[in-house]
Length: 274
Image (cartoon, rainbow, N blue to C red; front, side, top):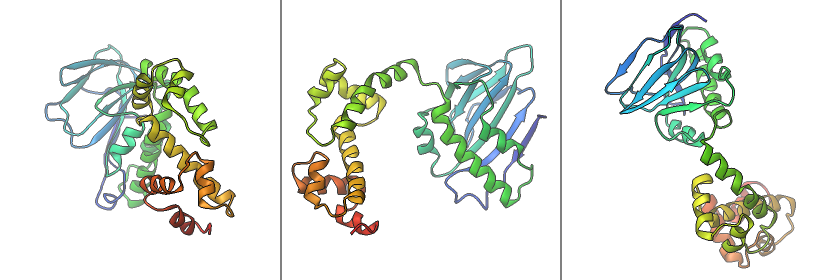
């Protein structure tokens, strides 16, 4: 692929949840210094060579298999440091859902990350292979591939070692919860599954699931109750409540509305389950 940069026309796509603003590929990425940052989000993928990324006072060495993320208005610079060509592709983007999409992928700030495989991020490659025009159809296609790119990041990026270890450690608890939603699940009982204290289990949940154990359990109970409403339309609401671990039907309805924004009866009516 030859070096190129495309400045996307955004007037017709600015209402979309995600849209590209610039994109390109450098056969040899030049030094870039931005004391005031850049106005949009950016994803860069390194294909060949090595470079140095500086964000505030933090320095990172980035090479093939690495990507780095830049959030808007964060001072940064990057430059090649190897003798060979530093091949880099990138896309700049914005939109009302960008922050949540990046958060879903585990990206909370500017910085580098490692890919599980040293290969092109396919949606990024697809964006770059689109026509260089600014026709509406092309910009819409860029937004579609951009959405796929952000969705792919969650499974493409290597998790930090401690985070991956902690998530693996908590999986037996998650499986136990799924199998026992029909009954009370004391925190102490859950902690004993992986031989930790209840307090430490709460910290593990916050770091890996980003929820308190009781909140996570209630979400799983409510999700199961929705399926039961579909599979057992003749069941009374108090019966469904008991099947998902709520002794009190009124409390079940309260939790259901808190998590879904509607009562169980409204949910059933909305989905034609009456």
